[in-house]
Length: 285
Image (cartoon, rainbow, N blue to C red; front, top):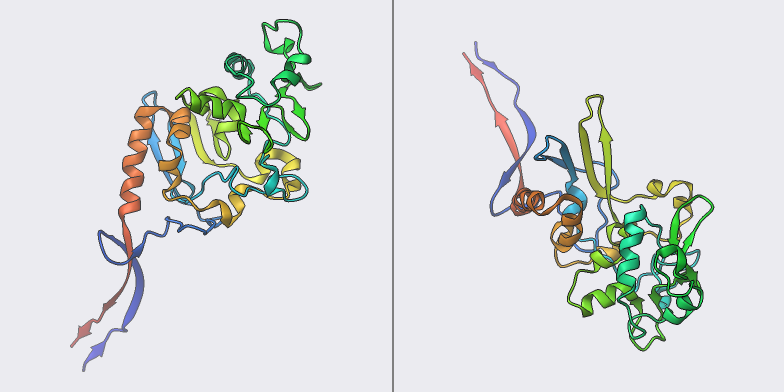
């Protein structure tokens, strides 16, 4: 008697270098990554802490389109206004953040900053600290922000400014051949990257690097008319986030850890995916 075992197939995914389709974590230009099923990798820091990275976001083609058709985050789209996410001013994360921005602000000239005279007119004479300068405001909550002038951050130059629209701090940094992330408030260069820190019972920290989501802004996040990480227009970069946002990632994790991250993400980006159907036929006599 001949007994034949049942024939079966099971889908298997394997990685090969060359051939096949692009790795499934790579989002092509114009495609928003899915909201779920993100892939993560972890790297250990020198101090024993753990860093977790959202591979799906870092391999996407997201880039900030401020000044390139960004419709902003107000109640109605306004791509011509060139205000982007600057309509509410910048909220400082701590006193050091405020002091650093104040120091760089003092390097601005009227050629850099459209509303310099407006801010100085509201300042205490020869302001020696942020609280004395008309560019900053302390809220009832104790938080410090940049002031809002004519519907946007007071550092945001408008389209009618001879020096061009955009952040005065950002453009001045470029003029000086320096990094804009050193000049601007932390929130202005970090978003839409976000770092979360979780501490376990043994005081060991795990840091998560991912994209900002609506819920990160609290209840007000649901009121945004448009948010950059949700729209295909923002996924138009020629290179993935981990390459295009090098300075920002280094600002979060440092140069050494960034280089280790690049090695891992380069490896994933170079992989392709081939679906293989494995069949097995057993024969017993």
